[in-house]
Amino acid sequence: MGYEVAEQMNWTLPDVILYPTGGGTGLIGMWKAFDEMEEMGWIGSKRPRMVTVQSDGCAPIVRAFEQGLDEAPEFENAHTVAAGLRVPKAIGDFIMLNILRKSGGAAVGVPDSEIMAAVTEIGSAEGIFTAPEGAACLAVLRRLIEQGKVDRGETVVLFNTGSGTKYMEAFRG
Image 1 (spheres, rainbow, N blue to C red):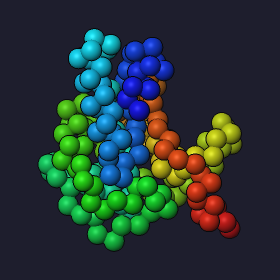
Image 2 (cartoon, helix red, strand yellow; image 1 turned 60 degrees about the vertical axis):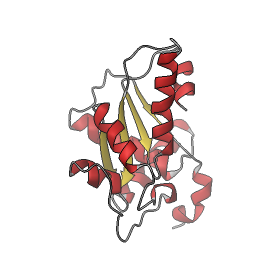
Image 3 (tube, rainbow, N blue to C red; image 1 turned 120 degrees about the vertical axis):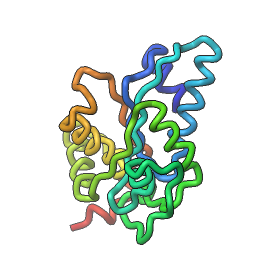
């Protein structure tokens, strides 16, 4: 994913990357890819602010980040419509937390109601049926803009890691 972002953006990394985080291997892998590309001379040393996106119903990385912890204790009674975010104990927690802090990023959770509203909004505006995990990134981006942590003029990449078709039961009235 890191190589894809760099290549698609003409070897200039964005200012901010929002990544829906369960186990965190995607975020960790991107960071590693950026280091590799710099070592090869493909990109410079500037890195994006990395943002972990989780559901309030399962937010171990958010909680650990906010508490200044180096590891994330298991999140008890985890629940969220976004199955890919329902990871109560991430194997790479300490690596993710280090990346988030090193990059000047953040860890933000949002309620399932905002996640599902974002699925509908993205579908209506873009014709893309995102998975709830990816839609959570839009909900978090809004929050970061409102808080002044992301400027509207910055280049931001939101990751969608799946299709809403895996979640048809969540959309049945």
